[in-house]
Amino acid sequence: MSTIVITGGAGFIGSHLCDSLLQRGHRIICIDNLITGEIANIAHIHSDNFLFIKHDVTHYIYVEGPVDYVLHFASPASPIDYLQLPIQTLKVGALGTHKALGLAREKQASFLLASTSEVYGDPLAHPQREEYWGNVNPVGPRGVYDEAKRFAEAMTMAYHRYHGIDTRIVRIFNTAGPRMRMNDGRVIPNFICQALKGEDLTVYGDGSQTRSICYISDLIEGIHRLMLSDIHDPVNLGNPHETTILELAQRIIQQTGSSSQISFRPLPEDDPKQRRPDITRARELLSWEPAVGLREGLEKTVAYFREKLK
Ligand code: UDP
Image 1: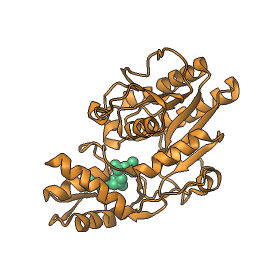
Image 2: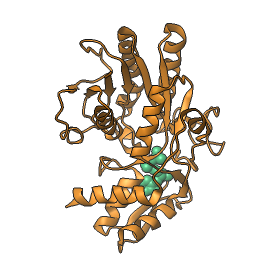
Image 3: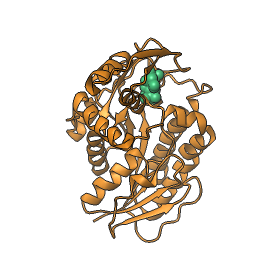
Image 4: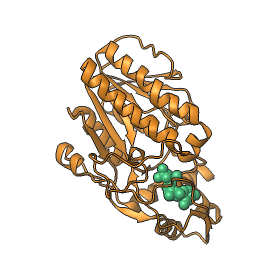
């Protein structure tokens, strides 16, 4: 049994990590300030091995007793969230990562950073391999997230190289599933809720931009394998099945049996035109690849939002 601190543990990915690691018999200390995380995501957990601490990890993190792993998942993560919370996003990526690394150092724990495909910016290389350095606009609206995560990666490698901390970096591509916030502004909750309510699906731009959507259970499995590995370089985790946003809208209308139409809205500034992970590294080093296809993942996510909208 390991003791695992999860920052952002009440968020979408963080709460699934709490569930999965509790099931595997570990003790979880979940830290979240609930600015984008929700108590509802962890309210079902009734375990003596689970402790929730409401705390902003940009401030000193105090945890009693030994800790084996620190998984740093705290951050606003949807474009709407980080546009509304730009300073918090920069602070949690920078100061929060520093504090979480400090905790790992103090406890001689392993550390895993939740990074993002956003470090590749609006990528000029396709699909994105870990070796690609990215094409990020530091002063654009998404810069607050992209640069915070790039700083977080640099800080993680500095703690690894200078302090000898046992670190991992996962670059998470678009992921969907239950517990995404209905109003977080991301494409999957938007389209599914619009389709279920019979409203127009709002496709930004002409919908030719692409994304590749991974189902949450696949991502969690990959994170677990990475956590147990000894890979210090970044590893992409995502589903390489690429779709245009317009195709995604049509698919969601069809899968939900909705009578919704599609309406086109302006493309947000610096919206990446294409995104697909190259997962060769995860395949080779973690023997990981996604098992849940887009149709099945969407079905499960639609079922969740149907319940929510009741
Ligand atoms: N998008 C869209 N309609 C929406 C929400 C998003 O067309 O209602 C587009 C958005 O412009 C982007 C893609 O869907 O090209 C994915 O957006 P999301 O906010 O999910 O995250 P991103 O991958 O851009 O970080």
